[in-house]
Image (tube, rainbow, N blue to C red; front, side, top):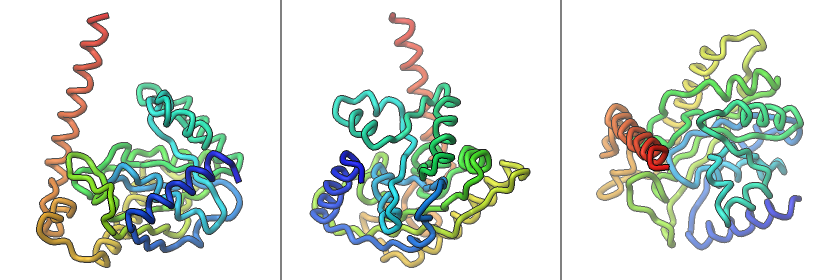
Length: 255
């Protein structure tokens, strides 16, 4: 066991216990005990990477997550991210990060990726990027379709967060290994992957305890919740992107 990663896992499990989180994890047997794989995860909450990693514990595996490069510069989080051998991603030029991830998978690691690229405010799956399919195809490994439901209630974008004791249930499902053929069109494989993960997520939502009252903000509009529709969420994402770009350009002009 790696000392940094094992210490973080022990601390995280203690935090989860203190919060009273109840995890329902299904499909742990689909995580291979050896060999590389790409773990594709939906993204609705800030702690999704910590929850997804739990699904690999029974198989004795550690997941190396692809994460924003800026996190690795943080004085506290940076050393931990490097110690756990996670992979920094430069969103302006991701080729080097992608090749590093492919090599990690070829070396027998499980690499965790978020095909939506950013968090979903609507709690529906956003359009997937083809990176997961491309990575699996180039490395010749399976994709592990992993869906999480309930994490948005702990901490998500623009919504009240619950970091104390809350006893929120969280559902994690690892589907059957998904294979991308060596000559298969990656975009078509990505559409197939999203369909698999959408069906999996919908089943989790149906089985989840009913949300009412103030908790309806954590439920998709499709299910009677007050979360933004996918169209409204896309407009909010575009507004965020515009503000970030304007801030970046202003910073360059002020130099």
